[in-house]
Image (cartoon, rainbow, N blue to C red; front, side, top):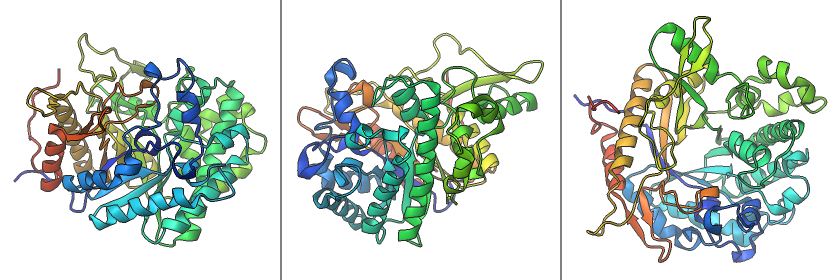
Length: 461
């Protein structure tokens, strides 16, 4: 009998406001830091911006049809903070809030459950101008935004994510300068911004729960997965410690525990305190209670990892990949093992149900001579990753759902429109939507609850 995913497994797709909505000046929306960043020369590939993007703001009904047509039961979307609160706080923009009313109603009418992410990187420019995440008050402003959204949509929306990938928007936006707001703060400032993001998360959880007793709340950090090259116990343990540890280099911010331990366990990891404790805001321990709010699930975005083995002392050593290893258009390695080991390691540590909130690949997509988009590499990528995820579930990882990134090709941050992640091709000149081969393939996966996946795929090489 073909192997299936567990009964009730949540199959979904995902997207984010700035990447698809467009309508940057419509109905009173205020500017975001991504509007400012994208309009700055040399910041985004070929000067692309999200000003029009996929024009989802005007085409949301068509896009809801595409989601429902997949058979997807869930859609993870984000809310544009500056569309709802143009100044980041204070006066609510009723017209902007009304867009999310219409979108949620359109999804529900088609049998699709909305899962809302409150912050997917598009901070109001007005908030950044008041200090952004460096200002401790940002936690209160974000909680105010969360309360507005929960009050308005809580009668229909039961699933909430507070913050998407703090590792990325802090690391690339506030340390490396590659993403909005394009800053290169010193380490103490990055740590302060991180602490305020965690405080904002906790206060947003409290605000959501105050508005809706039946709300289910989680978050969606980036998954920095180290996976063992063998199943030898020493290699597995080394990979586990490395996945849940803090890297020694300048890219330390791409880790899990510095963010997840305060939110889920109630304190920063000891390894981080030893390294960073003297640089943290004075009295940071007093915020633990506010940060550590009960969560219902752990969302995690996983695309790639780091092959790891243990040395003679048991230390994790990243291993080189062979010449010609498979990789995506983003030059990210194709490593299905991350959807086996990542959920296992995270579930073992945090003991919460896991949702894969993003997984997918940028592929070499175009409209072929027959009018279709044949994206066989994406199909193979997804097939292998879902097989690994199914194996993780069979071996005890409590994984409840999978959200493919993304439903539409869209604005891929600093890469502009040159990277395509969608199940649906978007012609950016005409805004025509063309479902790809992967759309129909994923449709079949959902319909069969994974039973159509092959049992013995050829080795990846």
